[in-house]
Image 1 (cartoon, rainbow, N blue to C red):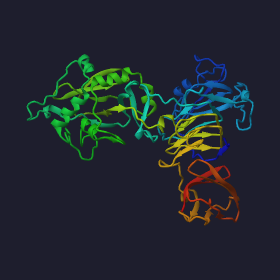
Image 2 (cartoon, rainbow, N blue to C red):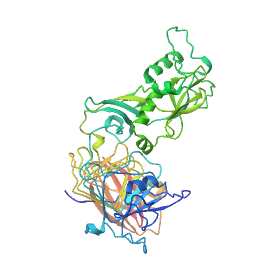
Image 3 (tube, helix red, strand yellow):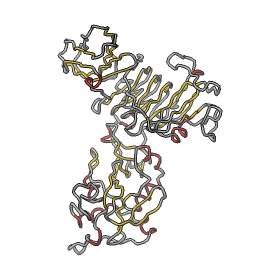
Image 4 (cartoon, helix red, strand yellow):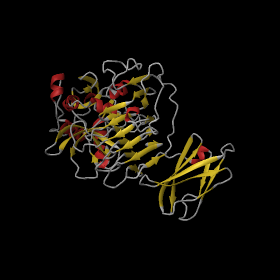
Length: 486
């Protein structure tokens, strides 16, 4: 396939306030070492990434590392290093090297995606100086699989904690969560409907055996109606409705009418072994979650994943609330689960100075799927395969990270522009002598490039109508914006 050089800009923000540490990984390191220097380097990239914190950098020596790797928010990964303790910054430029012995290669082995960003980030996070090859995402679902909205976008609905591969049915623990009261403090759940009873479960062992979250939630909704705030404060979102009601009204794309899980169901979530996945998608698993399991007129059971135990709590207290939902395997073959053969990026995730080659997807983006503000900077993408023929797939409906031109001392007009007409680029900086430009279409293909020199401000547009990304590079700064050509 034709080589593509992607030069989409990445906007870095300062990580001041984070304690920045350096970690080291090399091919002949040891998994028992802490990775604090090249002499004490680990050989396990993922273990070191998981250990690192936002603002830290993981330096990786040359060699081939097999497996699928997960990005962690704010943790940078840089490849191409010679692992020379006397000169720890000695490094090869991956874009000019053809010798694999002088490259840091991440290899999916033809069985899994090489790099995955599971959830949108708030902190820009870049992996750079790497060769990313032989990725092929598995499309089989299992316990721990992340489920996306409508199976067609990169927004996460939740994680499977139960799944039957034969029937395609399972249970989903939702990503959305909020702080809410349980509701019904001090017996105000007593109803005039005589046959509606909410059981009182008084021991931790019985609470963990309760698997009737759906039934509990239906009962609560019947008894309370739309609101059961114990100490109503309209300015406080934690008290203006209650846990079970919030779950019942939650809609996540096609998933609606979630329910508040019982203590036993949250125990099943814990026993499924998906805690690392929940943490990776941003779940707050360190604090207590309300369950739908009732204890008394004043108390209900909470579940703590960090300590694997249930604990009684007063119903007017605010704890984390997250719903569960049934799941049926989608029949759509154009699945987000297999998008991005080599790399899957979401908001604030990026690649820089990388080679992405010989990856394969049965969905969108043979090499890279870029959605929700992900970015590529100066990457070579070649030899990747996908059914739609796109080596890089941009989820335009979610938006490529776009910078308002006026905030960057640039004025671009008109926008939209008629087919065949030029646009004007006005730079409010006398020190800029030239600006390089690049037009990228919705297939991720660069359709034209060029340079505007000092005094020039007219830019030729592509000849075909459509939505384009215009990338402007001035010195070491890159700006981008969307242009509609009618």
